[in-house]
Length: 355
Image (cartoon, rainbow, N blue to C red; front, side, top):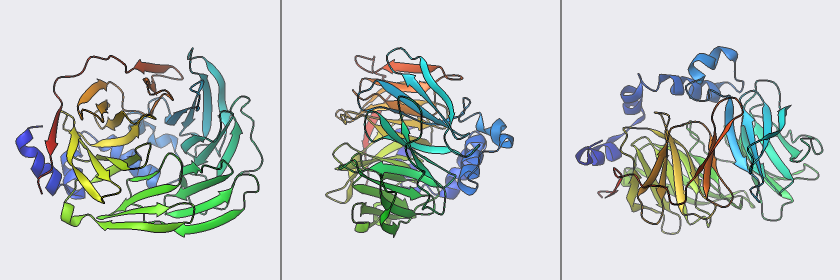
């Protein structure tokens, strides 16, 4: 992508533009995305197109707080647990949710307990060491659950559906404490902060931030004057002061939560890509986003330069010590990629957003 064309892409990109621009080379990804959004179930008939996105069948991946375990959730409602130090598979497949209903998110509450959310409308608690369920499933949602969070007290959880139903509930009793409706767009530009107390969502040209503990809207900004690119995915920085958005313009756009404005720089890849899944390291020093070309681009949040590009676009996660990026290769084989002292790529650049 030339620098001269970048402002045009940043300011003029629309959903129709993306569809036309990427219709040929991203049709498999778009079709799978559309299928997962309109149907809570992953049908085997999707597999031909879906294999371009998740050839191994995994949809999400995460480390335990200490970094000792890795858990992956699949499009078939199953999860797997690996030993992080050796890469050996410890547990799985374990049928965690209804067969062929996608596990959308896995989140550790403590070192030994994690939550899984799925398109079967439930959230479940699991013993990470044994793979056994803890208590009953949380079944208060009426739609497919796409995100789950654990609040600082470790006794309260929040979960949200693809239709925007936000519920705050007790982990022990499963009792719903509060609820709210959140405006959610079709591309899941939606994320909880690491401590679970904030939720960001973007629908159309409006960015909203919610106080999760009180289930109330605390910030609403019309983005049209900012003319941002299409925002595809979101992740908070560890201190929740910034939100990094993977966009449809080969860039990660940075939102300053306190100032309620975009920073005047974006992180840009040299590929003509749509950026999907976006993650930040626990220490806040790196941001990564997957591309529709099957790559993972990793940037430094300090230098705003591209650090490395990995050849995989499937679900990925950063290690708890922020030193490695891990994804699934084939079957249940993991690829663990050290990020410390990696050779920096030479084709990255940082631009200022023209106002």
